[in-house]
Image (cartoon, rainbow, N blue to C red; front, side):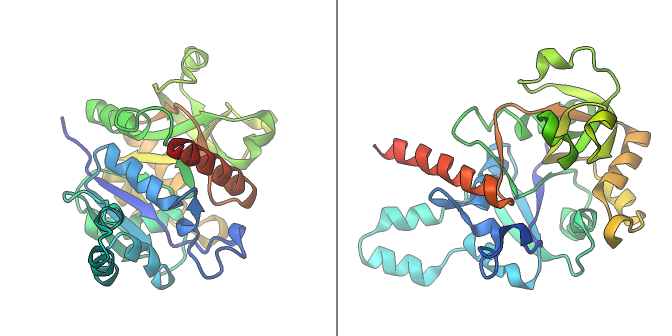
Length: 290
C-alpha cells in the first residue's frame, strides 16, 4: 500500500487568543505539562509513520524550528557535566525523521498556508495537523488510532480523510460541521475510529441549521490533488484562501471521508481550554513520576 510519509503543520499564526502569553513566545511553544504543545503534535505524526514534517511559519517563528534542532553548545555543556541522559532527551527526534520550515509569506489563511508547503511536498500525498489541537497522548495508541487510522484508510481507497468528533449542542456554532452522505450507522461508531463518506461541511452553523454534531478536529489526510484546488481557489472570507473551499471541490470530484475520533482532544490555542489542558497534562506527568 502507498504510505503517507509527509505532514504539514501550519505555525504562522500570531495566536491572538493566547495574549499576553504569545506576545514574545510562539503559542506552539507554550507548555502543556513539561513539554511545549507542538512537541505532542509532532510525536503524534511520528507515531503514525510520518518521516518528513514541514512547518509553515514566518520570520518571528524561528524559535519553533530551533526547538527541533540540536543546540550544539547546550548539548556539549550538558555532556561535559555528565548529564548525558538529559542531553539525549533533548535530541529526541528519530534519525529517520526530518523537520523542515518554509515561510508562508503572506497571511492569507489556512488554505494558503497548506499551499505554501507544496515546494517541499512535491507530488506526495500528505497529512495536515493543526498545532492548536492536541490529542490526548496518555490514552489510546497513536500508532494505530486517529491520524494513523486515517493514513491507513487513505491507503485503502485513496479518499482524503478528515477527523471529526461529536460536540455538545452549545458548541456546534464554533466549528465546521460535517454533512454525511449516510447517517444510519453513525451513532454506533461515534467513539471509535470509523470512516464515512462526507457530502460537505457547513462552517459554524446555528444548531438548528447543523446537519450533524460532528465537528472538524484539526487532522487531515489529503490527496495531492488538493494543491491544484488551493492554487485555483480565490480569497473569500476575510480575504483568505479557505481550505474548506478546496475540500468542497475535492469532494465533488474525488470523494472525501470523515473519520470519527477516538479519545479526547484539547484546544491549546484558546486560553481557557489551554489552562485546563495544562492542568491535565501536568497531573498525568506528575502521576507518572510518583
